[in-house]
Length: 288
Ligand code: SAM
Image 1 (tube, rainbow, N blue to C red):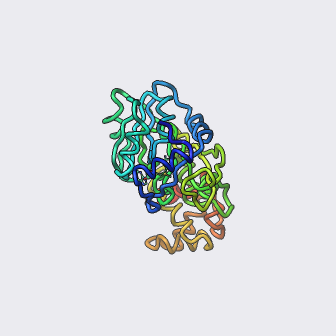
Image 2 (cartoon, rainbow, N blue to C red):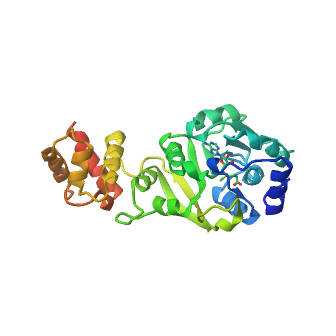
Image 3 (cartoon, helix red, strand yellow):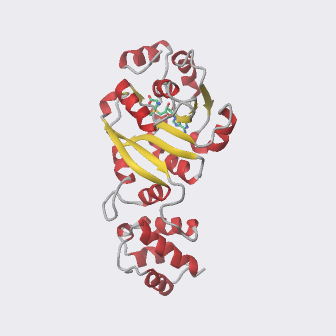
């Protein structure tokens, strides 16, 4: 039975005496048109495997199941399982796994549950908002065999993911996500289509994972350490931010590294493009 309507969701919650857990970011989608648009954005072909993070009451899961060979749904809250047994009844291509998505090895999960060779797979989620950023980073940094992830996030996070250098929203998340993936906002979603209603509007974002990082660097760990250092103290100049974050390298040496990378030390980190961060990281890596 399709739970994608406010009436059905209220009935399921009442009949199962289900307690909505705000602490787990439980805001259930009630609008079938929005769910169809999310599924269209995933662009599934019938042979593909899709992992859903946080199936909740199963509204998105059901429609993913009608397009994919298999849906592997990872849900932390065991208390939704009796409801899912009802809403997903009769679907033989859905596997439910009780786990914390933040701690999940997604390649392993797919290997164990795809029911045959899976190759690359897709991810779809109406993300629990309390862990949006770490989950996106886990999906990308884990270098799993994901070719596309379509995630609903708070509108503000969508703006950060797609921000241009020098803007208020541009930050470590922007640089990291775009390093691994091509990021696009697909469409916006008003807060009115959820039960319970969240305090902010949302947006659906697609992350198409690149075959190779957007900018080649000598050492990824150096690159990300510098990105983090530059954004930790956004108001400081690069020279000051780097010298205080990585104090084992002297100020003179940082000046030299910045000069070699062709970057003005008086600039702020938030104005650097991914390519400039790459030049800076490579100049730093060469000194080590
Ligand atoms: N997909 C459903 C929908 O769109 O109506 C529910 C989305 S709700 C925003 C987020 C879901 O993620 C909830 O079912 C919640 O229990 C689950 N969740 C929260 N934290 C999780 C975690 N760490 N790992 C897996 N699932 C989690």
